[in-house]
Length: 637
Image 1 (cartoon, rainbow, N blue to C red):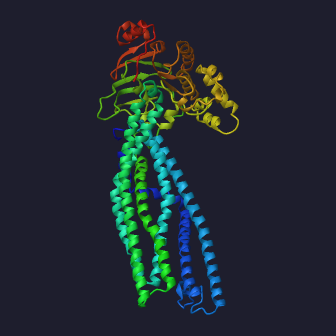
Image 2 (image 1 turned 120 degrees about the vertical axis):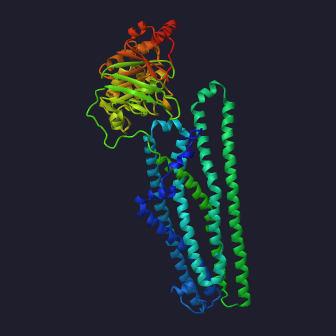
Image 3 (image 1 turned 45 degrees about the vertical axis):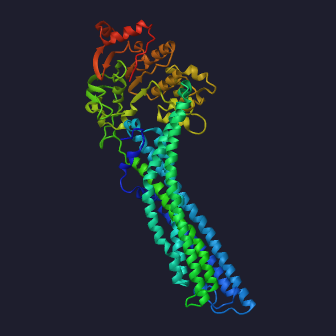
């Protein structure tokens, strides 16, 4: 169920378990790569802690010549005791330089390994998640697409999944940085001075509590922001897609106002979230400042007064070098909490979409026929698009023999298009049954059923690509051949050309700048409406279906072209079951039977001559078109 704007507020209800645990499940195939990357990241962080220790040792042992051993001496890397004489001090300095060089070498190597492995794993997770989400989206039922805006779907497939990749790529490493840096510094500082270490690390639990509170504050705001972004994307996509209508009606100011309203809403919500973020980060900076002042005072006082446990000069410098290192990861805790909440909000939408089950699916043991004859039966069919709406079809019963051509007529909203959508199971009936060759379509394997049915709509959709690729879309093997790199397969191109000839499209295609290799543009914008319809007819014919549906398929062509297409269609549907929804009633007057619908019910059935003689609804429609010289159009659903 979508919101009134076709958004995705309620999609989160479909999430099974915690969304971030679901995200981690996509990391399992890459666990070895991630494990090595994590270990390398920890080594990188520990290697970064070595240079300050070297500086402290150099100050105490090389510069001052004191006997304070320090951690390096404890670890056996440098000699203990006082260093006397220039030669000994130079030798110690050289050893410290070697240790520092090794630390930087290790840091550089492990940094490369950790970043490469973690980032490559994040890219793989992003790829798999986007592929799975797109594939799942493609299998959702038509009702889902009717209730959700394309802009919202694009926001999930792009913005949300990209945010999850960025979280894994960046914030995952930052979490390692916080744990390794804070943990390593805590151990080193506690070794030198437990008292000062306690002061330095006291804010850490406070930051943890503050971060938890921050998540509570920011969570509802980021959920709202993501939905606002989806609505803004939808508005922009609608306006850009309908730019011709906007220009034709001079509604620039109106649309600018609608976009401005959505942008202002996004601005207000974003600023509100920014206010909370800035306050949180300012608090973190204040805490680190307090720690710096306390360490300076307590440590300095101990040195001046010579108190037991007072730090050496080098160790005192080490504390401040490490405090500087603590500042960044401590502040990063808040940023990571912020990024986590953003990622969680996106994960809820992504896995909520993945958790949405299709309304129409193949049964557990589907019927897969060797061939389909084309008998179609509508048995007391009742259907509505929404459960709480009036039915669009009411008790419709109709038997269609294989190879029969059925013309469907009726006024706008009569249910003609809806009726034929039930045959390929674009929707399922509320009651009754639709049968193909005597088997309920709900028992068929969906793919096997739809492979035998082709639909040509009034406003056919063409994909950005060549004319040939759009025609080849009707056959999987032909499509693979047309879109493969290299020379076009001659046999495939001949099949495409034959389908175009049958649809009376060959002549105009041949005259295009690059013939069948001409790019049609987005949604086929470079072609006229009639040309798009003929390409769509050719696409359907290449599929060689047992059942074919023409839904106002010649509405955008001139009368002469319609006559040519009609001649071809008469030959092509001779051995196929065909449903023809008429834009012009002359299109269906030679149909084997004409079925007239009104308000979702069949009110007349017969041949053209029989229906005209009966002086009923069809006769009235026919006379109305005849009075207008056959140019009137009878609307459809």
